[in-house]
Length: 346
Image (cartoon, rainbow, N blue to C red; front, top):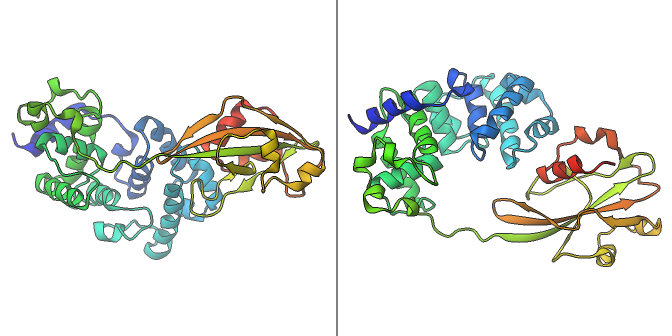
């Protein structure tokens, strides 16, 4: 039995019963692939169903506000995915009359759709012979063939893509692509792969040479940056508080948060009040300030760790742009802020 047949045979016996596998709807497949780009299936499943419930068609998604889309996405992280999903939906409605582009090349033109997502949609929905190469595929192929080329190099990306193209089942690229991703997720796992029950064990280079843990090869790991966040949680005398919207191209773009003062290290109350961006009106009103969390919260993102303190600022009168506490739930916020609100009771 050749590689493709062996892989598909394993898949048909072991695949998970996932909701998007019951469909050929390009919109639903697209949504599932975007959600699962940086998210585990267990977490992404609930978001997939929530999104389809709130935005059942691409027309519904395109007609929504960006804030509603981001609010629905809240908690998944990597919010650029949601913003690009929204932009792409508007293009699909405007330029394609609500029908997803049906080729790999056309799909690549949409915001947020790269090689992997275009390949997945084109093969699963439209039967195009274009292989998917994601983290699961890199891992499986890297181990099975003993590939030493780094996966995060241009040479490695090309080498793996060409290899996947040679292996893909021309008659059923959709099943092959789903099978190879599923195999990496369930069988050839990052830690503790199931080598002893693996149908590819006898020809696996990594198993034969005991190099499973070192493959696939990845170089130049990004250095983690530490940032120190100080959130000012204002509590007004009429059950109101302050939120501001993040701007720029950094983390959490367009999400809302409490007024933020960033520092170079952990700071105390006196240094906090001397911060150049501490609002002068709060000092003049003799606001009471107290540190909510004695132990800083370390919020870990892919390339940075946010060492966070929440400062409760009790002030009699807040500016006119304050919002009622009861309306906080309407605003899209980061997981860090959401976790604070879950614990803190105004």
